[in-house]
Length: 107
Image (cartoon, rainbow, N blue to C red; front, side):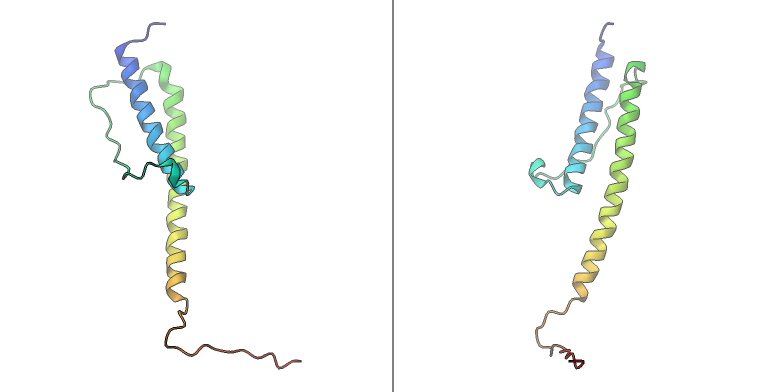
């Protein structure tokens, strides 16, 4: 099978997209060391690629499923973060307030 410039362009586009998904996964998992510290740029799909080569269909479908899974994990992480922030905002700091004391009088 001959690899054409069309196939190569699509392989490079899928490689770039896979890298973006991997970076998002690393951030969700707290593996900040895997991310170079620079802001993650928005993925910009290349133009002029034409239709996906049939030989890359399975890879593209697997990547789409991985994106969907990552988006779901990101959504859950965002909800968890909002809940943690709300809880942290409710915690007593102890500054300027009397702390409640509980005494077990059953003894």
